[in-house]
Amino acid sequence: MTSPRYARHLLLPEVGVRGQERLREARVVVMGAGGLGAPTLSYLVAAGVGRVTIVDDDQVDLTNLQRQVLYATDDIGRSKAQTAAARLAALNPDVEVVASPTRITAETVGELVRGADVVVDGTDNFTTRYLVNDACVLAGIPLVWASILRFDAQIAVWWAGHGPCYRCVFPRPPEPGQVPSCAEGGVLGAMAGTVGAVQATEALKVVLGIGEPLVGRLLIHDALRQAWDEMPVRRDPECAVCGDHPTITSPQEVEQPSVVPADDVPTVEPIDLASELARGAVTVVDVRGADERAIAEIAGAEAVELERFRDGTAAEVLPAGSIVLVCKSGGRSAEAARLLRAATGREARSLAGGVTAWARDVDPTMPTY
Ligand SMILES: [Zn+2]
Image 1: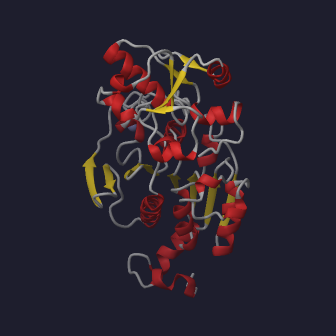
Image 2: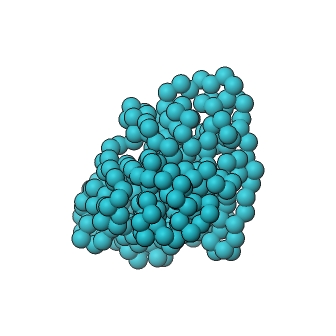
């Protein structure tokens, strides 16, 4: 443990030889080897954490490479967990790097976190966030959580017994369509590095028992202002999992469909839209911005951006007759349809699954993003 590899740690009185030993004895599980997981994993492995487990059942995709810096172009299509594990093992052979290409479910999550000193959540959907939170609360494991979108991030350490858990502060997921995913809303790639490095710092602090971890504090980052704020957060005695009378005694899945259901908005399937278009029976209205339309667009579509539905000026420019609203995957077009109906009473349909589904079902030559 006095290896020159850790010389810069050994110089720190807060770490030193004893701290480095603690790191070597530690077991950290990282959920998700994506934008946040890539920097977090790199720093944890470089720091000499004894065992690092990478949980991710996904494969590397071209759209990941803008921010998921563990992967190279040649890795497209390969298992993220296994590719990351191979790269990280080369970074530091002292560390036992375990690849777990396992899907995080109510059945698997308890076993996945078992024995961990710290869990890091780098996943990007509400289903896994609640599952991982519940499993960590029930096992008493501190959870270093973060979420990023566009230019904004939130980071906290949830630790039952010491402060609130994720459910205390976010008792239920947002309504479908309220909060877009990074795939729908975008994210500045470098920001994943900023935030993942903060998560690694918090995980190392918790293992070392130094400083003041982000327990009871929600750290809020605005990259455009390059500003950091924090908000105190408290344990909720009524919390379903860590409260005084918990109703959740095993990890609970929350409903969070990946594609926003348009239950209250009429939708049309890509195949059916294609035949309506062939008959000239409908006009497609694309609610995305120009940059997205430039990547992939349904031929003949008119552009009326979502903002105009939000500010109420869309109705003035929409074509007459039957219209179908489209976006990337169906969330924003459903929102636009709802806004239009609320403002004018006019019914518009939304393309189910957006241009992504159109590329899959109708036009495989259309690029996806
Ligand atoms: Zn709680």
